[in-house]
Image (spheres, rainbow, N blue to C red):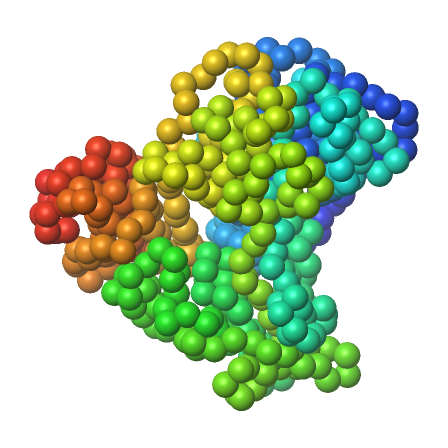
Length: 462
């Protein structure tokens, strides 16, 4: 019954949002500012425009999703929590900018602020004429912000067969998460109604954020879950083997199986439905559901070559300005000057929010301070239980990682370069509180001498 009410509310919100959308088959339209992309960064950009009193009918957002911008991390966290969870995220509850304690920007909010939505995907940009093509429509801009985020890496691109079968999921948008939950609900109902013995079975391909967050949720639904990944341990780009072992142990203690150093080569079917996954090792795992978290690539294919590329994204300066003076890039697609030297591209929500605000201020001629971003990564898993696990990481990664023991339910680590701390992490159950998080941020930001990791943590009261 609760799910039915949520679905009805979502339908009403979708219809309202559709009314706010402009038909992409109309004549040429002009806006002072055009945002291409309707994800988290777009929502925060709109908030900054409003905060800076941009005025009505000055901003347009081009989006392919049928809903207003929302806090995307919720899709693989509270959105897919099992029915027993106290918190299950549903729209309109997690529209931006509730993730930072801001106002919930529903379709009504955008209508009241005079912000237009253009339905569709941008297919090209004409830099000379300052035009963005969306379907048959063209939008003329004074300033353009590219906020198109990333798309999932599809296993079929590597020759894996069957990733288009029913119940094989790539979760990038709200509609993907909704289908995933509907599938779990249908499977749960099937086993209850038929009194069948056993459980639904799932395979998760990928040992990063998306894969592990989905695995943590699946076991809460009572699904027998296996995670398979090619690396020697989970979170291979961030964690040392010791950190990974600590977290892997938390997963295995909840019945989740970890298969290291292996990959899916084919998803198999029976009677047109997913029935199993064949691995490179030769093993076949039976499954009713599969989730793929094999990484993501920036959505910049529609951008002209004149916008310089770096690390797969659009190269920007400390104002988030691209190689073209009236075009800005934010979030996942922006490769920006790193405070540690060189350039970096970050796929995280904290950067999406902050880079969006920076670009808006710069585009409006407000001359903000140069972007000096301190990377922040986090996850929250098993939140529907009485023993959630949280980690917070600030800073930069180097090969020199030192782990600090923090008792049975917590672990920490520092990363160092040239004798200074450049990164710090605390992970545990229930995880760092707000005060701990502030100390961790300060530790990574200040860069003290990197002595013994436990001494470093004691020195800042962690």
